[in-house]
Length: 236
Image (tube, rainbow, N blue to C red; front, side, top):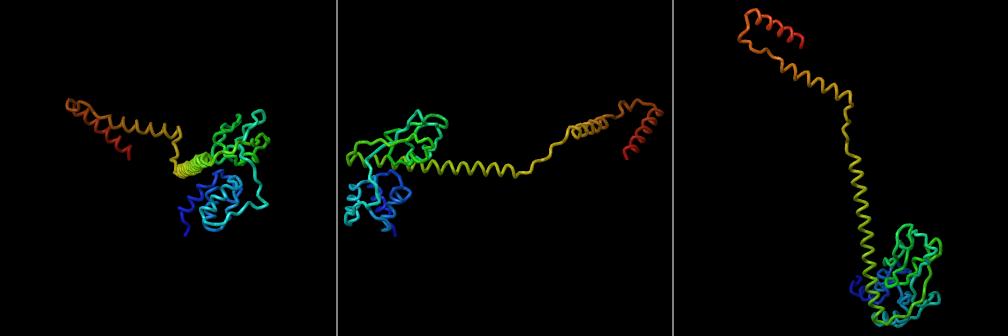
């Protein structure tokens, strides 16, 4: 059974660039593969040889240098040429730690203090306006502090993406549910007028009753009775 504690300790050593250069989709998956014995400790170029030594000490294994297929680069941060940026947002979508500020069709810029140098924003850019600028190598304490902050931003981004997916699915379900409800056919104007006329006729018929019948002569009473009889016959 994979030890969650061991995975956490390995993940704490990794630089949290989430660059995928180790062959895994992020630092945590790589840490899990190392803990499971499925991956070597020398697959993280951003961690450098110092990272390999820390992993070797943690796991009690022999130091293993990088292979010939691994390209080592100095620490760097991304830079966007503002004169070329078209505001397509593709770099924002690729950044795993939300280190790019900007909006659709507006100029984008790198938040240098947050950039992990993963280079994932470079390839998607359709106008090649992103380059990597070398940075000073941080001390070990600063490196781990920066990695911890980057991990938190990465987790926050993943949670935000999942929340957006859920909310989008809920809105879609609500629309589909509303569309499925039967809608009563509205009455036409002609139907409404006819119905209103019938209601008025019924009300008028109910209101027409003989008044002051106690003072009528027998002849008048006979006449009223005859009228009522004809009216009742007409209603049949």
